[in-house]
Image (cartoon, rainbow, N blue to C red; front, top):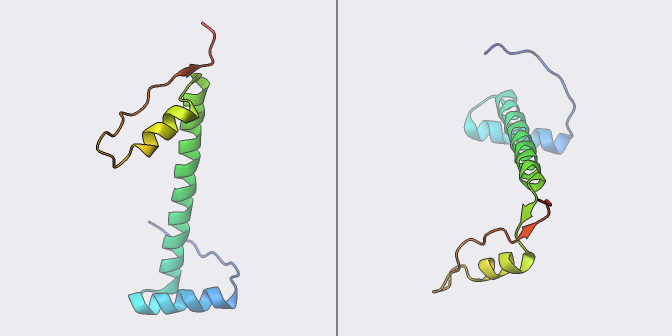
Length: 94
């Protein structure tokens, strides 16, 4: 993939840490910075997609009460773990 020069400012401590890590990995600091930026952008995109998917689900109007969810979570790692709760609230009028 072709690359393009891109300049930005970072504080001295961050630069020193980046250069130290680059030395440990025997890689150019720019390569580590590029990977870090790519990872951050991928994480932000994944978060946005998860929020959008949650909004689509919320628009369906079916939810699980806090009590049902808490009971399920409290049963984790118990001998009688409860099954995943079913939605028990429907806000869509049919």
